[in-house]
Image 1 (tube, rainbow, N blue to C red):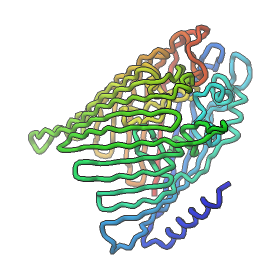
Image 2 (image 1 turned 60 degrees about the horizontal axis):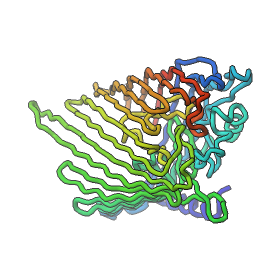
Image 3 (image 1 turned 135 degrees about the vertical axis):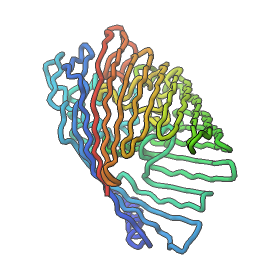
Image 4 (image 1 turned 90 degrees about the vertical axis):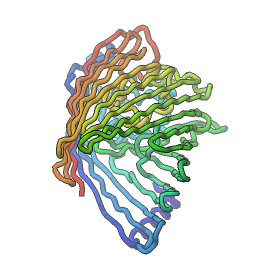
Amino acid sequence: MISLKKTIALSFCLVNIANAFSYKVSGSMAEFSKVGFNNRPINTALGYYPTETFVGVTGFLNIKADLLPKNVYNHSFTAKLGVMGGGLAYDGTKTLIDQATGKPFGSMMWMYYGAWHGYYGAGGWGTNAANGINNAGVGGYQGNQWMSQHTHNILLNEAYIEYGYKKIFRFKAGRYAGNAYFMDGYTEGFEATLNLKNFTFWWFSSFGMSWTYDEWIYDYFAPIVTTNKKGKPVNLGIHSGSVTWHKKGLSINPFFYFSPNTYIAPGIQVTYVHNIPLSHRRHLSIYTTAMGFFPYYNPKDAHNIFYSSYAGTSAQMFLFKQKFTINGKYFGYGIYKTWGNANAYTPYTDPELIGFNFWTNTVYDWLSAANMNANAFTFHAKVGGHIRKLSWEILGRVTTSPRANEGAVNLDLAYNFSRFVTASLTLEWYRAWLHHGYQVGQSFSSVYNPAFKATSQDRSFLMTNLHFKF
């Protein structure tokens, strides 16, 4: 139920939009499908799982308004409301049988479309006992049936106001698409940016996050949950601040993230853009990025489990990547290395930061690739370009970690039929080698277990996306 305060705030936004000096209505509809090439039967005893096949449909409707008269200069004040919804047209996981029990395993599509563990539920991942009904390898049919019956398939994904003064100051609050390094998706909170000469100051606070895209419907939830003095769950948010110095293509950005009672994580990113003039009015651009990230965790949470490893009390991450572009074509490569469980409390890293989409694993293993594991090393390389309305990319990666090794090669194609219709396709060969002591589906409920045998599993797939907008 929406509270009185939220109702008044929402009504205020609607009244202002209705009386705005200008507004725009937009929307989109999309089809997203994934065809997994591994149809091996589920066997929870042996740790074998297929790669999912499904078709989903989503729709978005937005209204954005300028709330200042057109004769007001240097200032901007906008508001936006957006709703979205969708569901499954085909679910290939719904009727699969667990060979170990002879019983249905239950649909896993709630993880793509409609997942809702309760507002504090998803924040309980990694707290061992909280994973009983949510973990694919533990909860089984009962947990999956419960999740499928409690999905949220329609939601208010955007509701925000934004104020700006020239290119100097910007403030944004509400529900909106975030842009934080380690908070990919939509956020519920606020942020502020101040530009002064060669410096940019930025603050970000989030008290909820969501994924609402063609591939995902995931309602807002508390990303980090802790307890108060009475032992009740509370959401103290995730916060970040940074200062960026930039001049002549060089950018130095020290930053920090923290969530009270849970972690604090300083870091630094350095980027450099170098342009080299060539003949025939062409130029070579070289983009270089290096980042270090150093989270420290509350010792009381050291035994919480993430990616089949204890959180511990500290960890480190290092990222380095380069991209070379010339005449509409590019080549790039990168490394991503973790020492300890660096992604324990920041599992929502922006794939663009790392350099590739790592949410392509099987739904039975929580979708994330092995690069997110503790003590993992990943190298990737890619080449791509544009040919008129066609964009293409070929990317390969290898990952090693104590839990699993992985190798993948994918082809991405995207075509713009018009400014209203686009289509994309991803064909990926993907192999996962889980080491002795680890098993699919146990990422958030079990560390090394000598009873689990090593397995090799195919995760190859075909993805398609057809997107219409107006």
